[in-house]
Image (cartoon, rainbow, N blue to C red; front, side):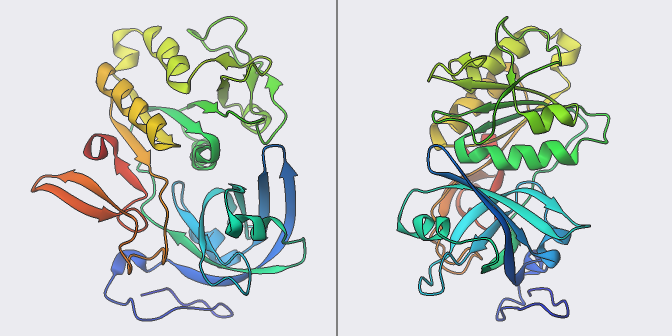
Length: 300
């Protein structure tokens, strides 16, 4: 069922799915909507019910315009249970997200959230790898680890300008090539080590793929430190495939958050299925509710 909280809206007809008990439907006010180069947008919405329940790796399903019924899945980048807001980073890739980009501060937007299986953090040092619009789940996961002993390394990649102004890092990371100093300011302020990668020659960034930069760091670890690493990733399919191959090479556990086209977003249409290896053999599973987070070895 979809959980009911006074003053919020709900959908019915799914009470046989206990793993969806925390999905809410809210009319959320847009508190801020910033545009960045590369048709990227960062939207902050006031959605207290959803913000209280959101976990890293989950997403929101947004109605982009009252006259456009088909929703769009957007990963949650940050959530403030205390202040009741969600941050959603997206890129314009079609008519739907183009309509979403036209929405303004003070508008209300209907959303369903949080949806999906979140990341499961093990007792390991997290290596977080995000590419393009796959960056938001990594930022959300990193923020959740701020107060833990498992200090992550976050590697982010983009082939368009990053949706923030990179800052030279003050955090030394052994194994990272000299000159690769660009970091995400928000992570830097949290005391979380980060580095950026791109093929576009952005200053301070690694000239190459995120997996190349991750390899530099992994190869610098001793055997004991390497055995304590766990990998988490979100991004385009080829990037995730490369991340899983890298994790397999170093014998590391890996979780991936898949990006997939969705219609209903709650498992009813089965339009987002992917083939997953299970103990019983290959099976088709829905990215929206059986994922979006999967064991990387079961998908690739």
